Length: 109
Length: 114
Image (cartoon, rainbow over all chains, first blue to last red):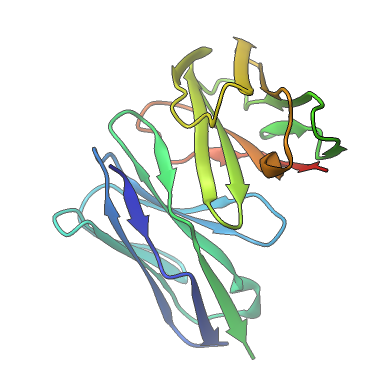
């Protein structure tokens, strides 16, 4: 079956670093995605990993270990506008993109 | 580029009524996805199409739900009859290619069934 796990909520302070973990068990694997979703809005694409290792994109980085079924999203120099839900999603071989339930991040001043 | 366009943005309807949600994918995208999002269950894949053909509808909750894609630029998700538990945000998304590195979401249709 399919299972994608993320923490439900996290809090952090402005300027700090936060790591959001995601573990997955799916019937196939063709890439892992991170999306950001602000309240009342659509998810927007943040990052994509298909090979093991770290992908860096400005203040955001994403890491993947396929053998461990594990990924994390690293957010540096947190800003208030980073308060949002962060969704981990896995693309199976069938092209289905399956989402976790998301991690709600609150950034405090 | 216009992005994925959904309508209506908000709908409030009475239990038992038919609801039709509409989606126009980004031009040239081969894949179209319908998702439903609730607080309890998160973002669930209902059905997806490739080149207008339904590929996997295993996420459609029951026979009250149906989806069509008559051409490359239009898709509908229909609920008949609607029930209060169908209240959710319904997102349409499209993707340009197989193994493409992202899908693009529309703004969502916020459905409330009373």
